[in-house]
Structures are given as structure tokens and as C-alpha cells.
Length: 469
Image (cartoon, rainbow, N blue to C red):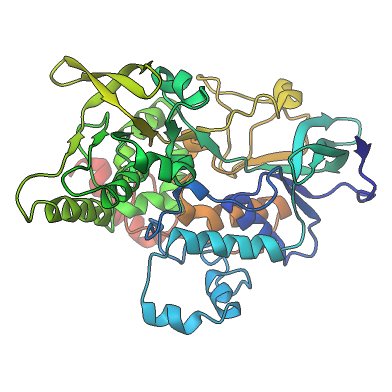
């Protein structure tokens, strides 16, 4: 293995991004026109890749196309989705298609276009360690350049005044099924790998889908559509008490605004934790259109008499699992409301059990002595998306989609990507290259005096609430 031959800048960079998913790609795109910033973004994968296993035909984003990488911060940006369509000569077809929610595959193609044309993004670079060098007031970042086969080719090091972490999430596999998901040849896969295993799954004599979020619904619907009528042989199981729709009312969506994010961040830690547990339907439910499509498909299969061989059961958890012979999987199930237990034999399992934040312990081991943590040992993150560090560290470590516990349900939402990126760049530069909206919601989420209410009206609006009238 060699050291990289190309020289790093003589001066430390202003910002190094670790990970290139949609959120750091948004930050890179909005940083691009800021000539005063020297930035670089590193990603270990060979190219941009957004949930390839779930780019199912017809699956759409759950946010409008305006929630692209830049538009909600800079509608005139050359990196907007509409400009992407223009460069592809598809603007008029899109106009006549009248699509507000675009296909996931199209969003993926748009992000690939940005990543392939934006300077300063480096794929095939794995960041290995981050350290603080107090003597020079910079972060030291070690990385490995990887070949097309994923093997290490060269080592490198760069220095930066600030870092932004955008390493994303990883598939979550429940503990009772972890040993099967890790075993070679056992057909227990996470939905993140669904398309890669789709043909083998369809060939199974019986399939079980576990998980009642949007991914579980889309996988179940796709399997159902491709199984013979009357011989579907599919189970769909969920821990939730119902196959529940996502909250998508106009005022409900205001939980995904900067106003709510600021309100949530200001709450006490125990209150935030209680709220997050209760708000699952804001971001973990199923799109109403997908629920309707599932019901339509099930109903269609009753038109000539009989019922489809599909079992949909909420309120069920998998207690344990094991292999029977070499081709079957046995799931030990418990219905939480009935306090009843049973066993299910199936030929394949798809785990639509969601994602968890990637652990940062190894990457940030060199910064651990400087990190401030909350009562649950999670990193403290301030209102500008910076990890709270010891005052002796003069640089900042920003985070993207690792602040659910401090900033609420909007943390993983694509609709807040451009606003958060703009907030980070405003904080980083100490200026306001991206002016922020003063108000983003009709809802006032607390009894404090919101700064968007004119002073003359604050007493009229808030006094009745404070006085209990």
C-alpha cells in the first residue's frame, strides 16, 4: 500500500464531510458557490447509491420534488431537481406528467447527476480516524483510497478546521433474527437488499414480511402482485397495533418544519424522549396511497370467488427463530394483545424493520475525551447541529441525520435537508449566505413568544393562554 501522490492543500480545509448520502450531498451542493470555503467530501462507496434495494417500480418519495437537495434553501441553485430535468431535456414531459411526488428511482438518478458533476466529492475514500490537534487548532483526518474491488490502494491524510458527519443509517435486524440474517444461504434478508434477492424470494413456497412501515408495505405489495392468484402464500406481520397510515395532514406535516425543530430542541431531554416514542406515525406509518393499492390488489383477487392466501396480522412480535432442515424457517410468534403464542413455518423472510444511526464510536474514538454526552450517553448537539465539545476544541463537528434525539422527527426527513445544510453553512461562515425564513408553520408549538409574531400582537395572542382564559 502506498501513500497518496496528490498533495493536500497547504492550508487546512474549512470543512471536510464524511459520508456522501443525500444530506451531505445537499451540503456540498450549497457550499459549491461559496468561493471562500475550501471543502472536500469523502465516501467509501465507489459511487452514489441511495437505497438500491428499495427502488421498486412505481415506488415514490414521501416528500414533494421541491424537497430536493437545494431548492428550499436556494430555488435558483444550478443543482436543483428542475435544472436536472432541464439538462436531461425532460422538463416539458415532467410538466405534463403533473407529478408532485416523484419516483424513488428518479430521485436516485438526480442525486447521481449532482454527485457526478459536483466538484470536491471523492468516492472510494474510506475515512478511518479523526483526531484533534490542539497545537495547530485543526482536525486531522486519515483516510484510505479504495480500488474498484473495495481493496485498499493508498493512504492519505488531510487537515480541516471543521467536520460534518453524514454517515447515515444502517439496516436494523432484531436480535431474535440476527443469527439467521448473518448465516450464509439462509433466506432471511433485510428489505434494504430486497431487489437483489427478489427472484429468489418469489420462488419460495411461502414468504413472510416482518414490519409495517412504508418499506414493509411496498415489499408486501410487490410480492403480492407477482404471486399467483389464490396461491399467494404470504404472511405480513407487524409489532404495531395496526397497519397504520402515516400522518399526512397539512398541520401534521408542520412537525417537519424549522419551527418545530427549534421548538423540539429547546425541550428537556426526558420530554424529547417521550415525544419521539409517541410520534412514530409521523414518520414510520404507511402512505395512504400504498395502503389503498394493497387493499385494491387484495380485493381484485376476490372477484372470482375465494380469498387470497395472504395473512396480514398486526400486534405480533417475533420472539425467536430457527431453521428447520435446510429449507424452512420457523418463527416463534407472540400476539401481544391476546398474550397468545404460535409458530409459523415459512420459506423466506424479509425484514422491513427499519434503520438505526450508524455507531460513531470507532470513527470518533480520537475525539471521545472532548465529547459532551447527555444522560443516556448520546452526544449533545446544539441548535446549530454541532456536537458539543470541550471549549478547548475551537473547531466544530456538525452532524446530519444523527440528531433525532435532539432535533426530533425531522432529522431523517429529506424535506429539511436543504434548510439544515443552509443552517450549517451560515454557522460555519459566520455570515448568512442563505437567509433563513423567520416563520415556517401556522402552528405555534409552545407558550413562549415566537419571534415571528409582531410585538404589538404578542400580548394579545399569548396572554389568554398564559392566564388560562
